[in-house]
Image 1 (spheres, one colour):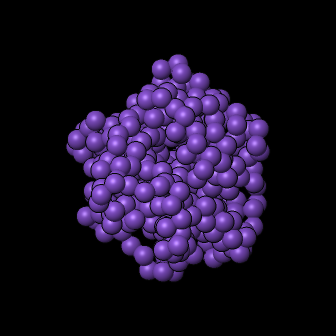
Image 2 (cartoon, rainbow, N blue to C red):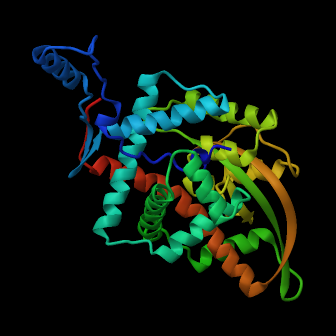
Length: 341
């Protein structure tokens, strides 16, 4: 497993001088004039960094975009996957970087932070999802040409984005007692103080639609991920490579135990129809295309009071998922973005 696939492909800046072409003289004895000319030619060939996007009061540099592109291309090569034409891929990657930057700027304005205890807990979870100790994970990171400090910063950024998403979206979603009662009425009465709820442990891969990825491209990418799974590829590895659901992709696509009403209708209907260990065809929802696997099913005993709270949380989660996409579209349209590809 390439450790880089466990990350979210956050760009690491690469010094332009590290890829500078060197001009070497033809012989041991050269005149100072020739030497100076060679030095000048070498300097002229040194790549010059440039701005590829302005996002409000910050910029995204060509070196950052090139680094992100290189990571994605290396992942695809290692996994035997195919990529769209470079210009198309570059536009898609830059759009994701713009969206990340907009959300991180909101987090900074709100003075949001991730403390080291919380960050270390997430690192340990990622390591365990790859059947490693934290020390083994650090060794694997270093063998892949990165440092644990790089990884920590990548994950800190992801956690900050999730934090600002939760804070902003939660303010836009409410669940009334009437909403809860309506679901209870639909489920029917239960005997005594207890009721049974069927839970499904599932994982998924999400391929989003975005301004630079068409419906056909998203469906084809989801189908490519499914084919890899059908050929025996590890679900967690494929999820980390393909999935645009960053929260679950960090943990190999795992969603944990899901209850009725907790996911959007199209997802829930497809999930309910699957047998244990069965992988779905690409399923279309308002978020894009999902590839779903059901890992386990169980029936949970719950009291009436806790049942109401679980229904409330399920409704809230479903509405929050729907509202997140709307919110992201809004903040993207409100931001000043100047693309300079």
